[in-house]
Amino acid sequence: MRIDTRKSDDLLIITPLDNRIDASIAPDFKGHMLNWIHEGNSRILLDLYHVEFIDSSGLSVLVSTLKALAGRGELMLCSICETVMNLFRLTRMDRIFKIYPSVEEALKVIKENHQKE
Image 1: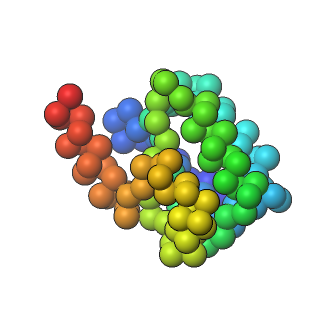
Image 2: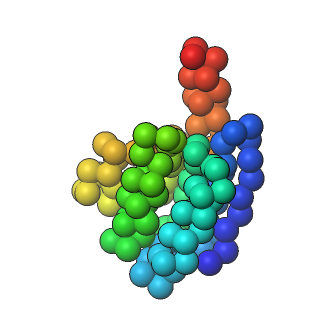
């Protein structure tokens, strides 16, 4: 699985470069996500710009990551294509995750919220 990562202050921005998150790569992706959390990354923005398809295994990775961060961090999503967003709506995942239209918009909102604290 090809993944790009970068930091913006204390936020880890993860961008999968493959167009699918499915059963063939889900175990590897989950391992990466849990390792990043174990390394101390508690605020994660997952940029799904390149992702055109997610199956139940991919959703499971996102839920596992969310659970691993529970009470000590957050997982946010951005740049979700319409096909994947329809899946999120169907499974009601759009009510569980903070979802932003783009990395830039997410960073803007996160910065504004941080200044209010």
